[in-house]
Length: 317
Image 1 (cartoon, rainbow, N blue to C red):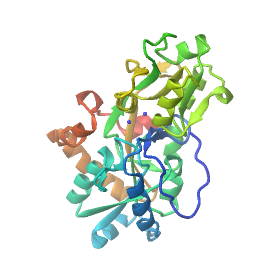
Image 2: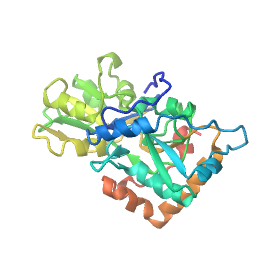
Image 3: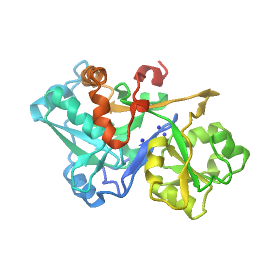
């Protein structure tokens, strides 16, 4: 998949036009968009998923888990980003977050999941306006987001990487290199990488913001920019068939002068602590048994992406 201002949102969650990449940044509206697989299916499923979710009661801890068990279905906010959550070529919902959601919610007594596609930057507004029950998009946990939603503990951790021209002619290996070598820099809408670059001294108004990693690869290949920043996983996947670009070695961005590792997790409305806690209990068991890695491995995740980070740590608590 690890960034951010969240824009206002229309009442309905619109289908994402392109599958979306990953994450977010220590600021406000993470990132990731994704490859163009299953766009038509996204539209159809988006229409099916537009009805609003019943408003949560004021009961302490929330009653959403009980209602989901009664309904037998949970609505997942996804951003159409490979490998985090997308519609496959067969028209079915898949990705690391939806597959994990299927496993966890089955254990919680909810047998079905229903995707509600939207833009990555609309996930938190859509969640809090009851358009779906849970965000299942590999969203990075950061303090700004933690003020708007509550997170499960991360199910994966992620480093950053750059897409550059073959041979990396400018020698770009981190955000400091980008600043020092005055490289033309791009990243995705709402990506955490925006803040990482700004923190390194890059002028935010000079950053080219593109929809996703596919557009980022195109910008590098055509010479519009020297470098596109994204997660190690998504950049690695998108350059596989490129004859003009390559990906750099993964690295930890600096936040407040210290190396930082991002973690992606499911997000819930702040009132639904019972559901979040129940989800965490099942997630811990999947980690302990090794089942989590088995679920995520088909999407390019490895032992290196497994983590014991907690939401509390990443929220700054």
